[in-house]
Image 1: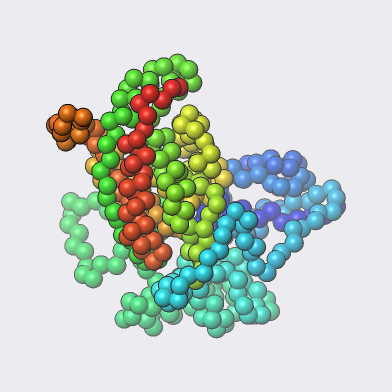
Image 2: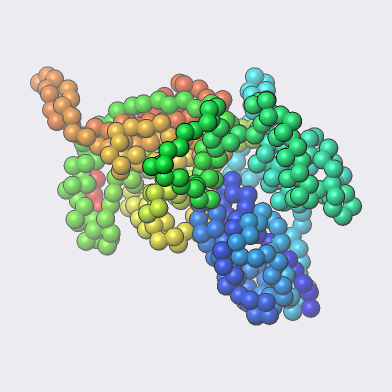
Length: 431
């Protein structure tokens, strides 16, 4: 017999912790490999977590409602044979589908602080638990600063309480220094006046996490937005003509979203330096084109499932992926894998009746595109016999990008190329 720890899995990109909602099994239960053991919530998704080992659930280490760091033990499973643990390497090997490029020296100074925070490998002699590392990252504690925190745990290890005590002292000592203090969701300079008729609503955990992520993205990336107006007439006419036949043939409707994603994927192939991430003083150029699409949930929050290898799918293939992910998102059936690995994101603000927007980049990507509402407008159209005024279906594209690594020329040419692909859609395309 052998005992193995069941660890809190990584639930998606940039997720560092999860909340235990419900234990589906109790101590003493026999569980099969890949059988769901508990349900976990993050700010992106609620999902069931399976075990990678079969055996007996010997001990549950965390309670329902506990917030647990990724990689921390949550249960002990007693197996019938020996268990081989995966080898731990000191550094992460680069993905063969990624290309690492060195950033110019001028960029290094602007992002070195963020690189230091994001690096989870601690180069001193002490062991740091995933929870401690997660707190350090969230509070912008550098490796050198972490090494100076006194530890009260076994063999001098830093505990959660050590971190909280240190943060309490640090916040008091730097209360007058906004440059050192970690960013907060709301930091008003004057006291807010509350009247008897006002309603006070506490943010739920998801709202707090979304707010914090938005602040972090604005702090990390130098946001710039370029705008282009695209003529969507061919696509609108084709969809109006074929949507009934499409539904009869494939059993589901076709929205405008697949057209947007197809055009974005084609443009990324033309401009691969949009499909990157920043890691310290290195640029990681992604070989896969994985397009995230923002989906509005019934709660009003947004979630971003990912269409992998979107450039390898035709319009029907993309449409089926879009419908599947959107439907499962709205009934809370997305898995962590559905949310991971995105390299570029599309957000449809037009679905809310907006003509344009300035979207915030989802880290660690460097760009996001918002598509606005399609509106009928009079426009000048060139014909063989001269220019005429005609009614056309127009839409604004808003492209926000990280100016640290994406210059205005690249950001502008990319959004123009997406518009070109949309405008050149062949109205005679067959089903």
